[in-house]
Amino acid sequence: MDFTTIFTLLGSLALLMYGMKTMSDALQKMAGPQLRRILGTMTTNRFTGMLTGVGVTAAVQSSTATTVMTVSFVSAGLLSLAQAISVIMGANIGTTLTAWIISAGASFNVTMLVYPAFLAAIILIYNKKRRTLGDFIFGVAFMFLGLGTLRQTGMDMNLGENEDVLNFFSSFDPESFTTTLLFLLIGGVLTMCVQSSAAVMAITMILCSSGALPIHQGIALVMGENIGTTVTSNIVALSAGTQARRAAFAHMFFNFFGVIWILLVFKPFVNMVCSMVGYDVTMTKESVSTAAFAANAAKLNFVLAAFHTCFNLINTFILIWFIPQIEKIVSSVIKQKPTIEDEESRLNFVSAGLMQTPELSILNAKNEIVVFGERCQKMFGFVQKLLHTEKGDDFNKLFSRIEKYESITDNMEIEIAHYLNQVSEGHLSLDSKTEIQRMLRVVSEMESIGDACYNLARTISRKRQHSQEDFTEKQYEHIHSMMMLDEDALSQMNVVVKYGEQRYVDLNKSYNLEHEINNYRTQLKNQNILDINNQLYDYQIGVYYMDIIAECEKLGDYVINVIEATGIKEKKANGF
Image (cartoon, rainbow, N blue to C red; front, side, top):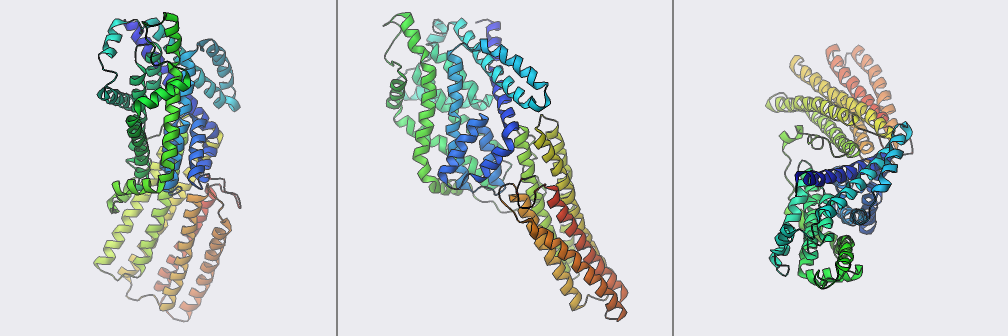
């Protein structure tokens, strides 16, 4: 085997992987927002969740994309762990379509169709409205060009006649259970290394269809691919919350369980699949003519695809009835970690860098914004507590904590905005570009909420330090009422930010609260002037009092700005 052949082989694999990624990216650009909405809403029970996973994965041709989206939804609290497990089961079925595409491309010479596809794609790419469709056709063309080149290279290499290759594979005992485990391990390691089960599947098909690799070893490689492909979702989940790690672990558990039971019935199951496709397991090169042996070996591509499909279908049918038990198992393995305050300054979703596609990156940014809103509300809770804390060590510790949270909100705005700017440099649909602009405004307004909380804390601190007089009981009552209105407004804001894309949210509640805050501020402002004139408290206490009331009113304005920035219309949840 010369260097030209080696580089042709590697280059064709690169074309295949690039084509698959380009095609998946384009499909997610065209349908990403809709797919995310479907994933979040069509999971009412285990069966609809499973069908949703099948549909989304078949549409985007990437089980990794579906799994990562599912893990992100679990992190954001939009899907329960049980729902996520059902979607992941469906994703494993949906990804079997990829094997059928590869088997078709590896069995027939499709390169003649590739060049007209390239021509159509380049025409569409220069049309702004149809650029994404052009990217999709380019991806399909590159994928089939890679498959066609890989097929031709495999034929030119005459692997079935190559003594070195034949001797290598014949050195393994096909009847040995150890051989099956070894090839399973090789398939898993290869998939982890190249991060593409499609590429490993293509190599396996070329080796099997050439007659070089026995079918049982080839199927062991496919089983290993099922294990290796779970690594991606687990890597993504490492920086996420406990529920996300559990969802990723459930994906690994699903595939490991399937491999274990298939090993117990390995030979009978493989023989059954072979008979379904019409492949003669007993045929040898010596017993029949070369043409008959080649025709039989050509069916191996479809044997591998059929095995992959049967394996995932049966595995899902077995495990879908035990989702509650699987949920208990993964929850017992991955324990809920206690919250450590120092970790609150760490970004959970965007710190790991951009995801494989801009659409998934947008989803990560949305999840981070959900966390941002929750931290703003938590910071406001500290301010309410500070108001009733006596001057001393407890007061100083709480004030320092609010200062820390102000720094956290500043950092979150910068990091999320930087992340979104990186995402915007990729090829995005017009809807996604609009989403990014909205999200940039959302994080800016949320940072203003953090500033308002810090300003409230500073006013309370100045009053503690420079005034001997305390607020009257009525003033405390009014401040408490105003803060309760802000608390309700923040809670409703977080509902809109977190669930607005998934379900109907009543925006009237937010606008009514904002009007109530404004009217209450005006009422208290007028009452404050009367109370100072009536000498119920001195002028300086009145200034501190109104500074707090005015800052609370500003905070309410920032909250309504966040809601408006999401772009969610009244009585219609479009997402942001």
